[in-house]
Image (cartoon, rainbow, N blue to C red; front, side, top):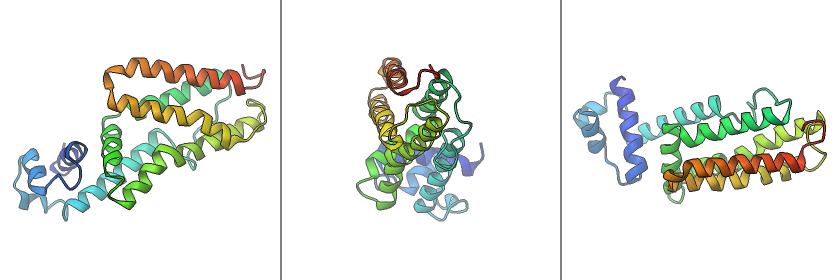
Length: 198
């Protein structure tokens, strides 16, 4: 890992533990094993580090979880929908960078408008819009019963977001929480999927 990458990694850990204001450039440099002036050879300062971290996390999330613009291949059956949805959820629950970013955002959302918008997008609006598009397209294919796709996306995603937040607070319960999420998704499919998709 390059010094530039190590700076980001250590900064994210410190931001997630101490918050943005509670983390100094000197602390980041010390964790990396360099002097603070050397850090400025790689980044203009703490804000530059934060912006780079946000950009990297956004790109990683887009590539592995998806978005409204990048929903990936549309599931063609109940089991494929469950599998793909669980893969996305497990990524967001288990990826070390995404977990630290989420923990950091939850703390900082009340102090920074940009971070508040990012938190809202990742914990509600973005996921909801993505699943509105997926469920709506699957309705058009006859896999879900005709209904309001945005409302169904709310019903699917809101409990999952709450359970992921619980897993962040109580990581020792991850297996139990993952089971609850799986049951929730299967119940959602039982209620809203058309007979032909089951």
